[in-house]
Image (cartoon, rainbow, N blue to C red; front, side, top):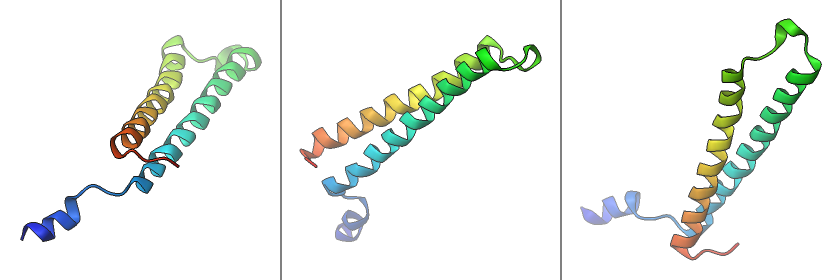
Length: 85
């Protein structure tokens, strides 16, 4: 019985840490796009299309937190499994 459960719930090999690496890369690009959008909106959009300060903070903080969390997950996975690319 426990062998069957162990098959489904045991730790995965270190190569699965790569998924966290790619999540980090994707989150970084989303962060860069968000920052670029905010700067574009600040300098090149009309007065009526300006974003509020709260929305700007939200627009930049969510991808930043996602990026940090993805980096932490990747670091934890690499260190826990002593996996090197």
